[in-house]
Length: 83
Image (cartoon, rainbow, N blue to C red):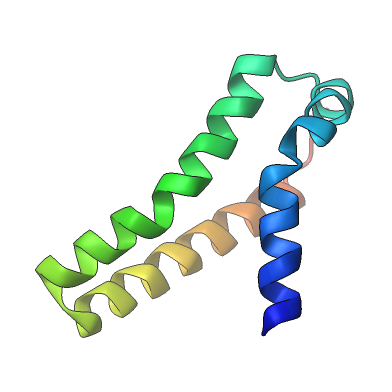
């Protein structure tokens, strides 16, 4: 567990090292890349608030539906033929 915690915190606090390679690789702007990292840090807090309001069953159900929809969309986009 401590190894996972150390790796996770290491990746979080060393984001500035990976910012330029991410921007160059995906051709994103610096603001978009930093914004994506910011959203990823807000996500767990938002999930906790939603869990407190809706309860475990509804959150797990909605997450399952969302992941299935996302997976189906990715599968559909991967199978699309682009001329």
